[in-house]
Length: 109
Image (cartoon, rainbow, N blue to C red; front, top):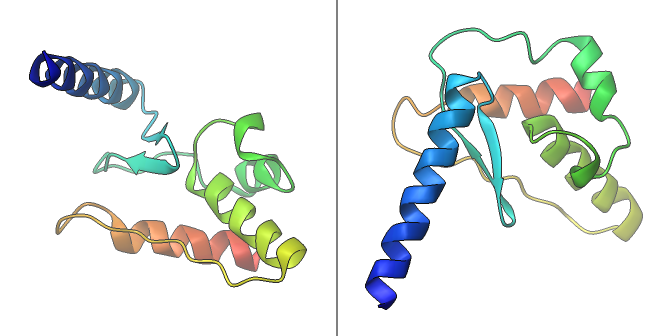
């Protein structure tokens, strides 16, 4: 029974990621993690207007995005006076470098 439940959960997660990806929604929260699926194309989701949309917002107030993760880490660093880490991990070509650039873009804005 446990094996079956795990397979059903995995299938529903993959289904959700596929649906979001097909709608160009490449960021998805899964618990504490932000899962990113590389679209292998440019999307208009990193403009100054989008940056402004995430400034000072809590993670649950805006759609999943690397900017939400970055803003949350930045605000926690200021408020709690503790170091913060954003870990971008994945296989070659997964978009780690691009997402790291977006973190820097957001912090520099």
